[in-house]
Amino acid sequence: MPGDMKPYMDLAEIAAQEFQNKTGRYLDPNLIWAQWYHETGGFTSELFRTGNNLGGFTTTEDMGDDYGGSHCRFRTV
Image (cartoon, rainbow, N blue to C red; front, side):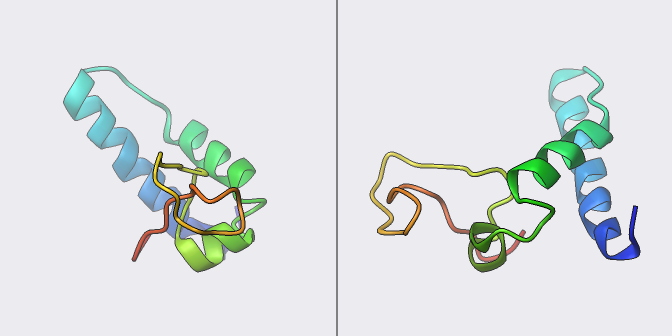
């Protein structure tokens, strides 16, 4: 994994730990990272770069974006 991807792996490890804390079930952080990598086109998609959206998260509200109007945007990853 390139060094510039490490922060996302660290975040995936945190997400996996939170999942385990809440459910008591193990989730491999590599699966989370791989899903994020896929969803963001290698962490390069415009939605990720401008909206910090790792998973293509949507809402029922019209957000007025160029991706169908319903993609969530976040202040930070």
